[in-house]
Length: 321
Ligand code: 2P0
Image (cartoon, rainbow, N blue to C red; front, side):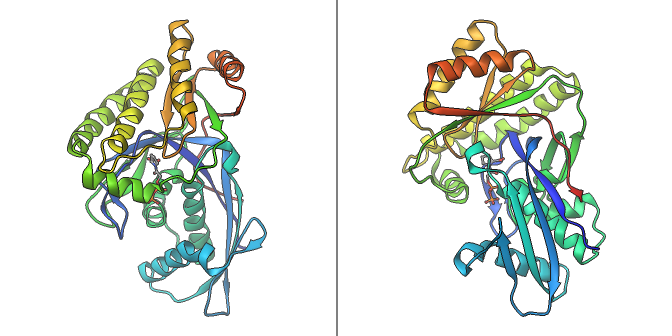
């Protein structure tokens, strides 16, 4: 009986922002993330007697346009592992867009796991991470739980994630503040490309990430949550400085994004623990403690009426159910 692969989403504390190789999604820098417990993707892959893959997402069979990225990925997998089977892919996404997290990380990690399962490839987690990365860079990190580092590498076999601490005993809880905004965003792929090409600060970013990765790993080892918060916030703002300094300039921030950032500074001045991180979108994720999260949530919801908040904790790696 073929099992379903389940993979959870992750939030980068040290961001991946820029590819040195587009085909294999090889990043310029290492990155470091935290896997979350609440948002995940379930994927079942079954070999079919057909010369086209059939892809269904949340009970809807996807048309060619909607499934193109997954079809291309399956072609890559067939090439990597030298087989020519086609698949019925059945995916259920438990990463609602309303929760403010990207689904590509859990999605491609679960898909890599599902192919491994149905084709009995017997891949270890390093090989699974490589396979997931070929779908989406951040998916390489969703193979593991807890704190995870993606080693940039230099070719398809040397770029993969490794666990830093899969079950950290640390008082960290995440509050996602979701801004209801309808404007179309610049995709991560395009945003990264434009930042690498035209931000005069890109080489500084590469240097910064290398030192911040070292510092945050030390902070994780020492369970120094304040240091983790400070480094994460600084790294996120530095990533967004690359978009503002690109030519032409662009930003993922909405007016509310800045407002929430100011509120977090106010909250900190009151002695309440809160640090911000922001991905390629307007929503703000706040690193809190179990004690601070309630106060942070109440403060933000009182000040801003048009946002919703979602709480997530530390999650584990890929599993088969
Ligand atoms: C990250 N992001 O480290 C960074 C921070 C967004 C901001 O990885 O082109 O969907 O598929 O490799 O992984 C989002 O980009 O990009 C992302 P591709 P991906 O989480």
